[in-house]
Image 1: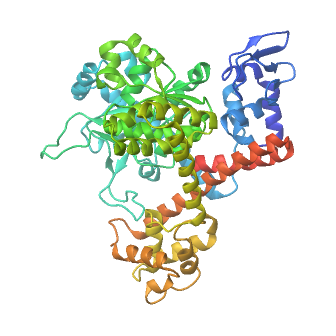
Image 2: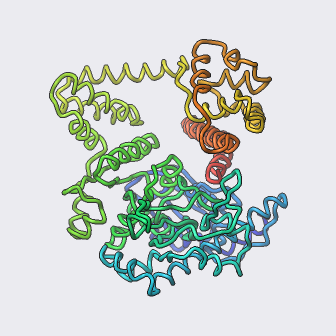
Image 3: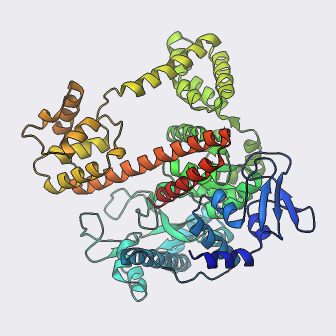
Length: 593
């Protein structure tokens, strides 16, 4: 991004208006405004913005900078991204973008066309919902209490029971490569990467369509709900179908309704996290705007990091069934490790949020929201429900369920409080609980130090199969080259020694001979005893490298956060700045991964 353009944007934008989208500001002088600092928790506003000098400063945590610095730090953007974001907010046209290679330009062009295609698809589905063939869809939505206002707000639509209509509508406006990359169409013929190569037909048919938007409100994918349980031949139909991952959409990186909820999440300093789109839509339309959903996918570290840009306080309200409870526990674990304050809603009658709001009203739901349990209280209750007997064995099982959750809490004070509360409610001596907590932490540390051999995980299994199976030349070359080029990706893994041996030489005639110890021999024997799956091994190797690269970036991100915290404690601003620059690059790589 050219420096002169950045300077032009900086001189033209109103910093008060831009920051005012994130922070509630009040005028305190001719050119000064103040509010609660978004970079640290405070009850008295010490955050100041000077309109004349285009500058912000916090007298509490000493964060400071211009409008680009503010957007970079709060939204986790690089400098060029921040310039583009601020220009877009101010309505300033961007200069013609320059690309480092023709491939980059082509990729950016396809992404832009995919955004346009998804907008066209959204309009198509919206129009189809008003057609005579969508009477059943409209009847279903009406039975769920979905109003015309809600349909318009969330741009709901309908995919007709037609293989070809949408394709023919889109073909005059979009090239074949864009249609094939969009995930909106399918084919009976596919290449090694799973992309359709034959005649295209509509992926979504006879389904109610829910657009999934990115943070800027652009549609990038869809969730589709079937109207019938079985097809014409009596075969079961999946109730929900989601868009596949595309250049626009990675399901673990997106939070449903974030585009509409983010301002209210900042204003109220908490997010309500629910499990499904209808839960989210019902609560939002009833008046609670700071609600987001995982869209039926497992909550991920990337989603946690995305959420942390807007608030560090979350109320979780997942479905009350066993699957929902398990998902809630995993979400609590992820949020706790990232330092979130977490509470959990348990609705009366075992209802999900959508049905509870429809049957009991929003005031009753707000009452449940106000009385949400602290995560420790919720987890202790869960332990007592799962292990209700008052026997010694049941107490041990309950304690073992709680110990990992207690260990995850960053604050020692909170860990001690959690442990004491659990001991009291479970009828366990508090000193014993603290000793078990201390011993469990020590055992975990010893396990990490010892690198005890574990059964191969899926990533290790795929790469080892590629390296030692004689019929997989292409997969072996790809696996060997990737491991040799990136040894940091598998550092510390159980199969690390095998990767070192196999990636830098020729696999021995008997693959077991590559193992240097009993643990490695056992791991290789397990891998060789399992047959290849339905997908091609080359494709699985690519997936494995994608996973390894992503995990490496996540590890580096955690290391940078800890290093920055240590540098800040030392007052080493130069080191903080250096680490921040690297972290911005890592954050961007994770978003693009």
